[in-house]
Amino acid sequence: MFEIEHERPEHAADIEALLDLSFGPGRYAKAAQRLREGNKPIPELCYVAFQGEGAERRLVGSLTFWPVIIGGVPGLMLGPLAVVPAIRGQGVGINLMKRGLEDARAMGFRLVILVGDQNYYVKVGFGPVPPGRLTMPGPVDPWRLLFRELDMGAFGHAHGPITKPRA
Ligand SMILES: CC(C)(COP(=O)(O)OP(=O)(O)OC[C@H]1O[C@@H](n2cnc3c(N)ncnc32)[C@H](O)[C@@H]1OP(=O)(O)O)[C@@H](O)C(=O)NCCC(=O)NCCS
Image (cartoon, rainbow, N blue to C red; front, side, top):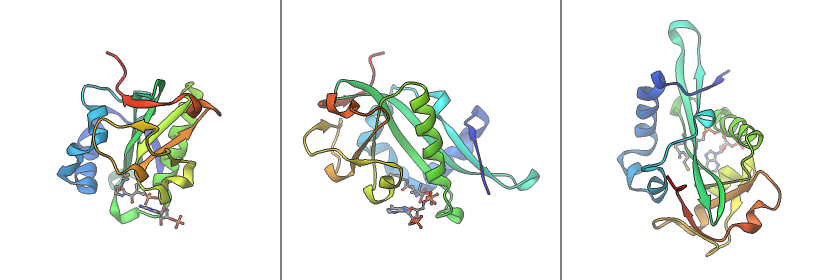
């Protein structure tokens, strides 16, 4: 059993430790990081998962969404997503994403991208961006650039670079 909550400032140290453990120091070198630097995640779409009771209560997962412009269409980048190794495979990751994608749709967001493993993210409706259609601000394996529409037809308008929103 686990509970999903909105991220709060006091969760920051546990989230950093989870991301370091899950991705290692290389996480800052990724192309997706170029869209995070100088950008701010959307507070209503930042989540943590907790497991346990009382003194045993532990942060076991984290998910963040960032505002980005997806080939001209205002949307979101999903990630990082991480779950503590001890409870991977119990649905925490999928449930964090389902919650986030539902809330994002309710907020009026129409399109989401991410860089990740298609075999996993297909479970929450992501599919591959056709090669050459969108470009990231750095090298990315084209098979790992994925999208999910929250509003049918939104992807049809998306062509070109993925950028940060203008400040
Ligand atoms: C990827 C990650 C977030 C998944 O979280 P999780 O809570 O274990 O995932 P869930 O329990 O919700 O989903 C598990 C299912 O996804 C599958 N799965 C997990 N990672 C997968 C992957 N990389 N490729 C394909 N399937 C994957 C599992 O086999 C399982 O399938 P099943 O339901 O058919 O048994 C977690 O493994 C993690 O933190 N990994 C390290 C960080 C990372 O790689 N994050 C993603 C960055 S792109």
